[in-house]
Image 1 (tube, rainbow, N blue to C red):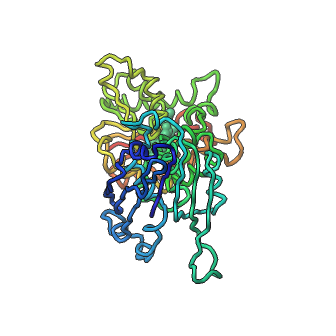
Image 2 (cartoon, rainbow, N blue to C red):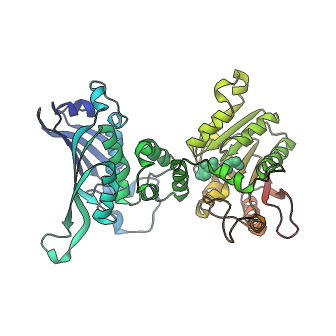
Image 3 (cartoon, protein in one colour):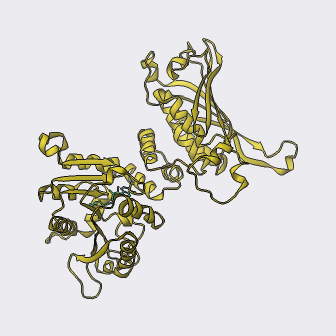
Length: 458
Ligand code: SAH
């Protein structure tokens, strides 16, 4: 698979400085999926072209250690990965041109900051949705888009076109922006499985896309496809881009009652009481959001409190709420904020007396819940785990909520008391915990309390 970037900005050989690659040399970088080569097929004062050639080893991909076998399938061996501009190309580009992607240039900083005339050629682009989607992605960013369909087989024109396009993009842009657009949009066009998609993909997307993605008319399509296999993350990124207040606050809004302590406050009070009642000295708040519980635990005298969240934005808010920048050394030593995902095993989660999961499980796809159970109950396995989640039966008591509507649009499910108890009992039995249940908020005789809490102890 091949990508070329050309410029006619004179002296055109400055492209070598911008990409931090000498036009006379070929540079090769190894990846788990193959090799990437950078070279300059053309380097004159008037026109210079850099090429990124990625050789994917499809056999090596299939045999990569740690890849679960998804049944025997020839697709693993015979596929378009070696030829099509897929997410592999994007990964290679992100690494090989990292400095340029970050807008830096040692020798030509002023050029790196300037919009220059560029032409990008991609001979084989898998284009799910066809040319229309290609245009929808690149035209709003100011590129002139030329695309030619590639026939399935030139010898048999009656077979028609393949889903691949040969693409040329022309624009006057900063090189860093050009690279960021390709980095994010190539996987979006490809829309295939990216085996490395993990929690940090959301951050990459935001980091590379923040300035232009928020205003992009195809923003939803881009985020959804980029994070194809992580729908919960896609929702979080969309939330962040929408630049609305976080989910936590949206929830508080639905639930706030002007005269009484908000449900949120009652929840925090109940969780703090359980945790301090057990004399836990080291507590981890998993999915800590903006750090309200972290603050309350510190105020209640818990010696060490750690908050974890997948969203850098809410972590930044937590940092501000906790005044992390102006704590005394001693106070600062009591609190830690970690960026992490709860469905990936993480050694940093071990060694605590208690863990809290407050209004978090319902943000995960039910299919990912098993992964969280492993991470929390099998690997971190603190002596106490406190889990809260909405009691869906209570929703009928909230004014203004339509039947069947969840309390927040990022919720993947909301459980009845029976469903929550069934899950919690199963988890307890599987991991050697016992579990008790407590309602949070006013208990309605018919539909129960608004929030339900399970307290697991080992
Ligand atoms: N516990 C907080 C926040 C609840 S909202 C409170 O009660 O106020 C759910 C939080 O879980 C969000 O901050 C969200 O970013 C986080 N979250 C969702 N999925 C996650 C995951 N897979 N890993 C880590 N955090 C996650």
